[in-house]
Structure formats: structure tokens, C-alpha cells
Image 1 (cartoon, one colour):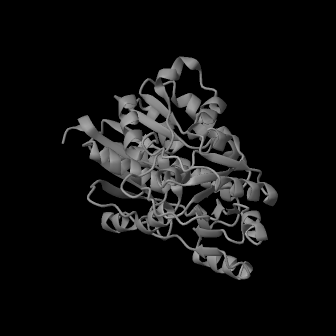
Image 2 (spheres, one colour; image 1 turned 45 degrees about the vertical axis):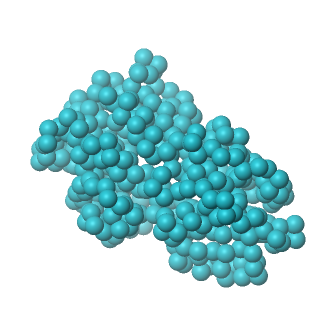
Image 3 (cartoon, one colour; image 1 turned 60 degrees about the vertical axis):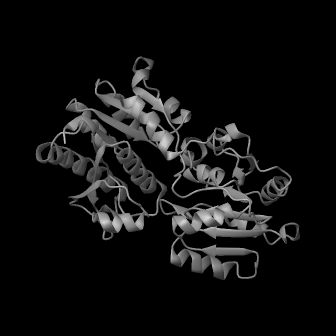
Length: 370
């Protein structure tokens, strides 16, 4: 195949993983392949669970008939097991792997029409070689801000920001605006759907229970369901490791209306969402969660016909174009209970036709890179 529609996704992520970022990258590869791109995903074999066997990844991510290629690349230093200077080792490992891998891919594989990445270092090294590359920016650091500003000066480089706040914070010169795109996430239409068979007053929280090793601070939500005002509500929590779920089951064993489960398949989760009434968006109040996120779960909740209650963060306010969110104050049980009680008075709005899907997202990106 010529390089006309050949895409290499070279990224410093681990696969397989339950993280939203790995799900999004797999979804990007999958939907680009549906637009007749030949896609290869390159990533570091950086942990004990790293696996570049496509059949294993296909099963893990519940990929149906889509085909793309995967190739794990050697990673020298397992920083994830480091007990000291972990952050410094991560930066070094990331930069070193990116430099070596950019050269390996360019020297060992036919050139693609374009590279995609979520690695700022991969973006930087490819940009310096004047290779067409797109960086997907989902969070920002001072180092990343510096690397993006250096890289965008090259005419072959483009950046996709997940929301307006990220673009504003990066403060890239306006003369590069034609090579910048604001593009949010999107739900995967292969799995998520709405149903008329809703269970009244059933709420769902789906997602990890911690982020980057830190708790998402959800105890105030779980405790709220012990109040008599919510006695006829039910909360189903899907996410977390087996150890986290066992700990929560023990901690909240007196709450009969709160059910904890570890990660379930997309098929099972989509069924649970379609049969529930309310979806909960919540996280700890770190800078990323407050300003720079565009949570995939929002799109999956709306696609499933859920009413949404969400932590009152600026990033969540940006999601409210559909006017289908009720907000509550983080770590405030009374505020959360009020939002939940108000939600059952609201009509369920059907916004799936207006909602960004993974397919429409990739279509927008293809227009941007063409």
C-alpha cells in the first residue's frame, strides 16, 4: 500500500489498560481503519502486562471486525516500579524511548502519510524532522507547554486540544490557529444505546476509583445513599480493581442500596447504563479534573439516555451544551443529594443525534488533517 492513507499512532501509553486514554486511542485506531486508513499502533512494552498481540487486544477492547496493526517497541527502564525519583525517571524514560522509537520507526518501516501521538516527546522529535504529525493534547504540564510551542513552529505539525481551556492555557501564538483544532471526545456507537426500559431512581457511576494513584474522593457520594431521603434510590458503581472493590464492599456493607463491581465488559456496561436513570460524573478537585478534562463517560451517559449529575467544575460546565446536567459541589453531601433529587423531576432528553460520536469525531479530524 502507498503511504497515501497510512497512519502510524506512535505513543507512550500502555496496552492493554482500563484507562480512558487507552480506550480512546484504540477507538481512534479502529475508526480511522473504517475510513480505509492502514493503521499501525506503536507503543512501549513498558510493564509486565504490556501486550502487542492483536488477538489479545481485540478481545480485551471488544473490537469486532476492525483490523489494524500493533507493534510493541522495546522499553529499557521500568520506571513504574521505581521507589525514588519516579517523576524524573518517567520524564527521562519517556524522552529516551521517544527519541529511539522515532528513529526506529522511520528507519525500519515504510513512511506513513501522517503520525498521530499522545506523547509530547514523540511530537517534538518528529516535528524537528519535519515529519507530518498530529498531537492529541488531553492534559498540560509546563514541560509539555514548552514542547508544544517549539514543535508547532514546524509547518508539518498540528495539535488537537480536547477542550478550549487547554488551548487557552497553552497560549500558542494565534498565527498557528489553522493548525490547531478543538475536538472533544465521542461515544462509541458500537456499544452504547438508549432504552425505554429504565429503572426509576437507579444511578450509575462508571469509571476508575482512583487516578494516577490518587483517590477520586467519592466517599461523600457513597455516604449520601445512607440518608433516608435516598432510601428508595439505588447506586451501581462499576470500576476499580478487585482489591478496591472488596475494600469498598466492606466499608459500606451497611448500605444495601449501593452495589460495587469491578470493571465489566462494554457490552455489559452499555446494558446497565441503558437501563438506569441517572449517571454520575465526579472526580477529585485537581487542576486536570477541574479545567482540562472532556470525560468519555459524559458521552456514554448521554448516548445511553441518562440524566446527569456532575461535580461543578469548569470543564464539566463546558459539557452542558445539551442542558442535561445538574451540578453539585464536590465533597458536599447536601449539594449532591439535592442534585440527585432534582434530577428525577427532569424529563429525559434525547440528545444522541446531536452528540459527538467516535465516528463523527474521526471524520472531523480527517477534515482537519487533509
